[in-house]
Length: 369
Ligand code: GN1
Ligand code: MG
Image (cartoon, rainbow, N blue to C red):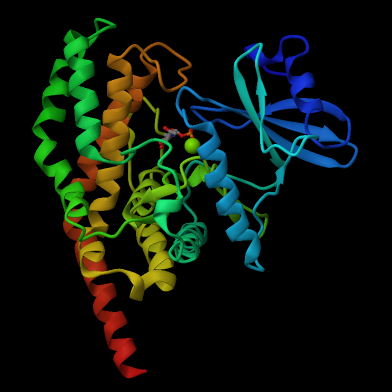
């Protein structure tokens, strides 16, 4: 059992008892998310997954659940779906609100599988790329207007800069002086980092329903290294496919976790990067427009930078958004992500050539067939 405040006394048991399932034998904390709290509940009739939804982050909780229901309905309609089933309460609701602790809870079936923070296995990288592409293929026909933006402008760098400047101006935790060189560097990157959202604003890069949190940890594999499903569906909402490609690349080919402090040892594997992109393009190649292809190499530095600026903003704001486990945790995360951004920017020419060659080959093979 964990030490979190939900485990004291009766709270978890009382919440579990409101869902329509067999009596619980035990409740164990699972997962490593930065936002919600997750538990596995063991019952006579199988295991289920219980989550407390952090409603300070996901304020429109009802809309969040509606997004999730719609997505799961879509996935279950396709015959290969391994996505979890939502478990309703005894009165038929899709979540429980616990008044005495002001907390929201939902439950799904528990899908056993393996998830990892990064990989050195080309097959895993290729399968991850394919899985994200399949997800995009399935969500493409959905009307983005039917999916509520539970965190508006989530991956909009203009908005992230605004929040960052506010945090600097307020400096509530009195930490700004300690990070001035980093803050200066972030400021100097603004034009380069807002070029992609400018293309989005000009409708050159299409908006569709995407996952928005495709770090490798959110892709569940079975023991044969095949993808079971994407997990952590809270941010499924309008976005661009580049956000998902970029967030996967932010994690999958990198040798150290996102909070590693020894940033001088960070490395990005180009072989893994290529395998992931190849996997993605096998499924989605002819669906990408010219702008998406043009910006594809930049997806990785973009998403890595957005995480960096978000971590730094939270550090300046006094660690109010992400869970932290140690002093300066958010600052270590930010430094790590920014070190990776520099590496990704160095790799841009190589990545562009790779994608260009890939495109040329694909065009040739389409012409021949
Ligand atoms: C958060 O809760 P978790 O760990 O799945 C965050 C993502 C970041 C991620 C960084 C709603 O996700 O955007 O990519 O941390 N989710 C939200 O690891 O902010
Ligand atoms: Mg998440």
